[in-house]
Length: 173
Image (cartoon, rainbow, N blue to C red; front, side, top):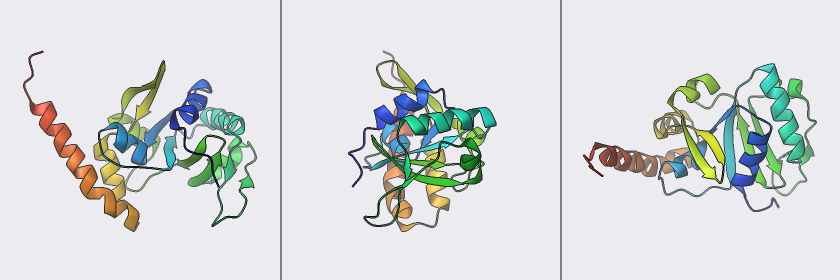
């Protein structure tokens, strides 16, 4: 059984290793105000050789291992950037909970595509991360063929509408 999720701890390790990535999925949606729960952190990394080196080092520090079906033990993940370059999705468990590394989320072209619409957000004292826009999270989840993603789309669209309505307010503070 994986440890309880400590998303901030995972993100701190990635930041300490200067991994260029965008947080996607439910954590990104939560940060945009969607009322979702999650058991993992999803990231989309830049796939340059230098960044994959940094990602491999961060994953080694996190004691990352490949999640397996059911209650099987995780499979150790060698800290090899060449191995990371060959995969599109890495479903990992770490000492701080589950981490999914998704190179090209559905309906996106990966890091550069998501980075354009992302925003920097502070998630912990001194920890600023890049978070995918809610529009990009919705675009990806709508394009996926997974029932669990389609199930949360109404909540995501509702959060987007609330955000747009708030942005449209002419607050003179």
